[in-house]
Length: 245
Image 1 (cartoon, rainbow, N blue to C red):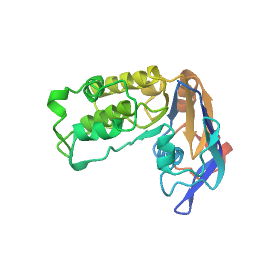
Image 2: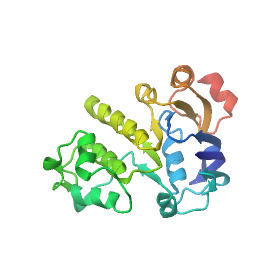
Image 3: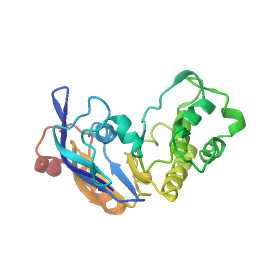
């Protein structure tokens, strides 16, 4: 469904992604484990096609179409969406309006009320609230995921949806991910929490801009524990990274 083939990306004169390859099958959860600074968010932004994240080499195939040169809008129209690590705030926009915008160009089978309920938020308490800094970090994360549900994408890229939130919110996030798969989506789940990565069908370990290992969550989690440390070796050779952890 998604094929990332040998991509490299340089930003601000630093090579962040290095000959990286990744495959995601239809209707599966593929988690990416990695420490801070390893290139996880850069990978998400590159697949989504954000401005400034243009590959130096390699290609990205989506449903057998080369989308390497497509804009973010064109990729979104093809069914790809991104949930940000830090959800946006929109002064003057209500949560109702935000979710309706998310649902505007879809044939969603879920109402905006159902989308909120599935992330554990009561519609009557939230729909008329502003999408602003009166919301907690966990609330904004859940509302962002409700918007992804409303879109009903073919590929949902979730950039650390579990960061900076409470245990209760993590349970709802897991439920939303399962709901996306039940609706026919593939999910790229970016995290540094082993227990969240464990819900995936396949897991990859990312270090210094490269995929070091792909396999079952159990296999890759063991590898991650044994080899991965805070990423201070972004420009070191791969064998040196593996030998020194």
